[in-house]
Amino acid sequence: MKTHDLVPYSGVSISTIIPSSKKKTPINNETPSKPQNNSEQKNPSSNNRLWLGLGGLVLLSVLITGSLLLWVQKQSLSQLQATIPQIPDVSSHPQEFSTALKEAQENALSSSKKTILDGIAKLGRLYHANGYQTEAMACWKALSGQDSKNAQWPYFIADLSRLSGDESNMRPMLEAAAELAPDYSPIWLKLGNIYFTEGAFEDAKRCYEKRLELQTGDPYAAVALARIALREEDQEVAKRWLRKATRWSPTLPTAHNLFARLLTAEGDEKGAAKQRWLGTAAGRFREAPDPWIDELTKYCYDIEQLLTLGSIDFQTFHDDYGQGYFERAIELAPQNPEPYEALGRVFLEKKEPQKAREIFEKGIEQPNAPATLYVRLTEAFRLLDRPDEALRTTQIGLESMPNDPDLHIALGTVLDDMGRYDDAIIAFNAAMTDIEHSAKANLSLALVMEHSDQKEKAYDYLYKALELQPNYPQVLAELGALELDAWRLESAEKYISEFYESYQGSIRARELMTQLSVRKAMQAAREGEIADAEKFAKDGLDINPLSPELNSVIGLLYAQQNRFKDAADALEIARQSRPSDMRVLMPLAQVYTHARQYNLARRVLTDGARLLTAEGRTDEAKQLRDALTRLPSN
Image 1: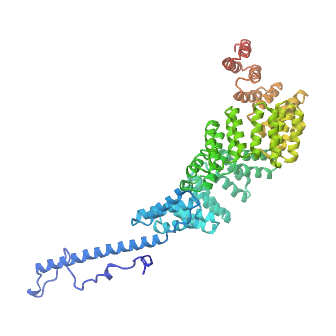
Image 2 (image 1 turned 90 degrees about the vertical axis):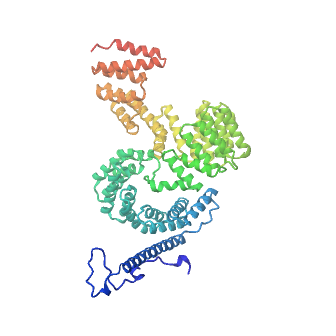
Image 3 (image 1 turned 90 degrees about the horizontal axis):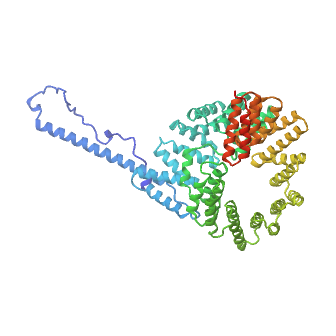
């Protein structure tokens, strides 16, 4: 029989191994019965031999029991080791992964119980983090049998069940984890989600409330409780939870999107539109933090998985924007150009073009570097205001990839920057290899026409781009901007509104809508339609409440109506963004003067004059000081 076929020793007491004596042996403080005759009197030497014999039996029993326990433990560990999975083929991963697995496997096959358990735990983490679900499950099940008080093992089994789609196994595993670690808040959120899916809303509610008890101000639990309230048709409670969720985390898109649906159902389209925009601006949804699961990523050697994890952090502006994941990918696969491009983009997003340049340059040194790396390096050089090096980068890229349309567009953009418009046109025309790039090239040609003051030709290229790719966002934005500049507001609104409705999260969409509202308000004011002007300004403020232009416009409108308190509030918001703008300072001082708040007027003029002087705008500073002299003394 093989060692691992033995079952653990159990159910055997020491009495089955050492039979008890029939003769009663006196113990301390017990008086023996009176002997019948002298021959039966107690012999001291025989009494000592009796005690020695009993002591030997006790010692023997202890030795036998210890040996049995040791034997049982060894058999148990042997059985445990027999469940350890064989290392699969991991040749598609970096060598470091194979080395880490072998090291953990050696520990798991050692003779020390602690080393064995540590080795199996590391194997489980390595397999789990790198997508080997069967092997990871074997490790977690083995540990659950040996270390049954550790909540992580059933929790990891639940996570693997989720990944494999075995939802029936998730709830009992999470329930087991919750019993072992009731203070670990992610368990309650996940368990609540399962109860919610099963329709057990009261159980779900208790889980979410427990989550909030452990993690005050958690927006995920608040959204979940709002969903339950909606199921119970209690809109007011749902709104309360959603208000809390959006306050606790303004960047959680789920809260805004659910709030938008609720407001739409109530007929509040204006409020719903605002929540939809906030949801879009919040970016990509990310799961709630989960330290136990997140800790597994330290054991990840899968390059694609690292790039995915980094991209999620980058798109959600989380933590270091994915920088750590991309750096680890480069360390594991230094000849793979993809992580270099991803890491360089992080530095571009962080407004660190010099670091981005260094990373992109290392990237193009790797075998089979794609055209996008040259394009990104060109972008970094442009941000560094080094057009000659940007030009040289595109030319080097085109030497090895002469037909790449993105490189031709990058070349044309650099030539446009340098004022070499004819050469830029040639480059953009060379990029027209398919519909997508032809649309992009036509947009770029339109920009060249604008820069060279040929706006009518710019329109032609923009219309052509829109034919090739309807609803092309940048084209809609550019057409809207051109129409705004020409004060053709009806036409501008057509393009800008379409752009805004499709891309509410775009900063440029907000800016264009703001400028449209400003111009509509100004035009209405010039025509004497004050009520319409105020409405247009308020519509814009719903989109961008801190816009200095809109607050200036509506502040002046309020001032014309002698609504000095409202005017001052709006102009103060504008002053926060533009503390040295004469178009804000002088009207604000006048509003305070009309309201007889001379001290506030004096403060505005004094602070403004100081800032203007520091900026070298002495003439404007003098105007404010002159206004100061005309203020009443009290």
